Length: 447
Image (cartoon, rainbow, N blue to C red):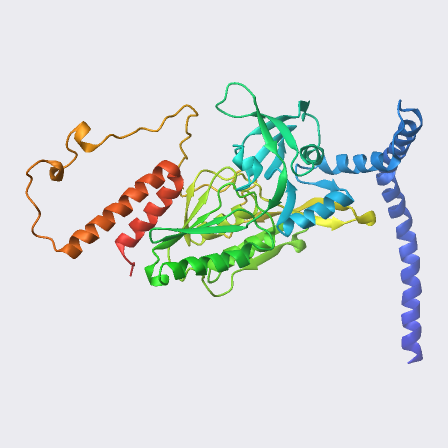
C-alpha cells in the first residue's frame, strides 16, 4: 500500500513539473495572441474618457457604454442587440401577447428599416402598411443610420398619439406619408372561421397563447360544421406572421404531425445542437392541410411551413417567405438589461436552411394588387344586358327530370360557388387554397 501511494505521489509531482515546464511557453503564446485585444480595450478606454471629458456637451457614461455594447452586437447581424431594462421588460410583455405600439414587425436591411409584416387588426395594418415597405422617416426625421432598436424606440409613444411615417414601397414612384394613431396592441394569436366545409385558421404570431388558442379555435369550428366528418380540410394561414417563440412553432407543428423531426438547431459548437421531434397525435385527424405563406412570413412561421412541407403533411401555397433562419437567445445581464444574441441556425426536417432563402411554396400564387383608383363593376339586371342562360329565355322549357330536393341541392351548390367567386375577389390566395382542398376531396381517399 505504501509503495502504491508513493508511486502515485511521485507521478503527481512529476506531472506538476512537466506541466510547469510546458505551460510557460504556452502561456506566453496565449498572452501574445491576446495582446491586440488588450490594446483595443485600452483604446476603447481612451476614447471613452476623451468623450466624457471633452465632448461639446455633457454625456451620461452609462448611455455611452450601453451604446457601445449595442453597436458591438448590431455589427454581428440584424437580429442581435442590447436590450435596456425597459426594452427587456417590454419584450417579456410582448411574448405574453400584449404591448404598446403600431403593430408592425421590422428588421434592418442595408441601413434601412424594413417592414417584415404588419400584425392583423392593429393601427399599422388598418393604415395600409404592407410587408416589404421601407420606413425612411418618422415625424420628418430620417431613420437612416439608426440602429434597429433606436428606430423602434422612435416609433413608440403614448397610446392615442399620432405618428407620421414616410414609406417607400415597390411599385410606387414616390415616397408617401402615412398617419397612424398609436394604440395598445392586444394580440389575438389565432383567428378562425369556416369557408364552406373548410376551416381557416389564421395564426398572427407565435406567443405563449398561440397553441392553446389554435386548439380551442380548431375544435370550435369543427363542432360548428357538425364534426370532423363534415370538414374537407384546413387552411393554416401564416401570411404576414413575423414569428415569435421557437417553442410555440414546435408545438404548432407537432399538433399536425404524428412523428418525425420538426426542426433542428445548430450552433457554433456542434455539441450545442438540438433536435425536436413530433409526438403522436394529429389535431386535424389526417384531413388535408394547405399552408399559406408570403414575404411577411418569417422565423417561427417558416419553421411550421417547412416542417409540414417536408413531411408532405401540407401543401404550401403563396409566395416565398422572408428567410429568417436564425435563432436568438435572450440572455439576462446585470442591471436588469438583456442581450439578444444569434446563437444558432435552424434546419427543416430535410436538413435545409432557409436563412436568406426562405421557404419556397409548392404552388406559387401571387396576391393580385388592387389599384387605388380601381372601381367596382356594377352589374345591371339581366333584362338590361340580355339573357344570361337558357332559363332566362322567355317561354323556355322547364326541367322536369329533377325532384324538388335535387333542385334545392343544385341551388345550394350554386350559392357555394358564388361565395367562392366572391372570395376570389377579396382574397385570391385563400380562395386558391380552398379550391385545392375541394379538389383533393373530389379525388377521394388514396389506397
